[in-house]
Length: 285
Image 1 (cartoon, one colour):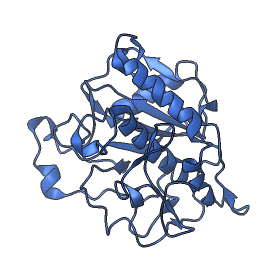
Image 2 (spheres, one colour):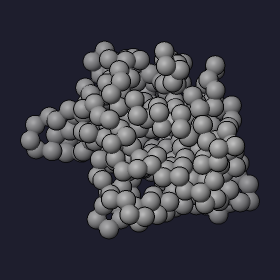
Image 3 (cartoon, one colour):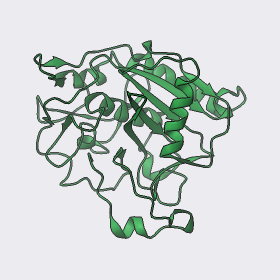
Image 4 (cartoon, helix red, strand yellow):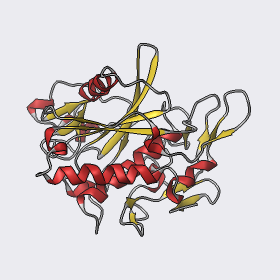
């Protein structure tokens, strides 16, 4: 959903910790299984909204926040390295190639999204400080700014993806990810301005609940599935104003959870992607 619809009953009946009426942001959320998309996901093609940018040669920096990701005795150690390996091959593979049909036009003609080695940005960061149990959207943005303030140059084509351990959960207003009191999303992407920079980011909470679990997937494959979804959407709609359909669904929303997510021959988890070429969901192109 381009602008998430707030369901009054679901989001107003919250625990005391979330009763402060904090509004949900416009960040674009990957909803759990069973959460209805506005008007359904299929049907109409994506529409380009003229003058809006995409990421033509995207890069992804992974920020692993929490000591367990760099502790060789923790399962999170291999979890993080597997996600890095997934990222390293994703931007040049057939699953990513589906979005090369989409483009930007900033006044010089259509410029299509290209395949790119997503790992060619600045170094990933293993931040061994302990995140709060409730990681708010402001916390995520602050973590990205800590990374950029740590000697890492900002890049306008980079998506800064923040991963948190199972001991924490993400919140945005009264909505939360797995582990929180009001499950309303599995992950999300957004952008914010700081010092004249348009910073693209995502939060990738630990997929520790049934609503964010695909049948037959292990935990890291569930997370790869979410990285697949959020990365492609952050490339095709980085500022939430480029590619979406008339109901506000971005490219991956239109195929989220149906058809069922799949595992490729390398064991990585993916979801189907909307193709305007065939007006339907496809695995690859």
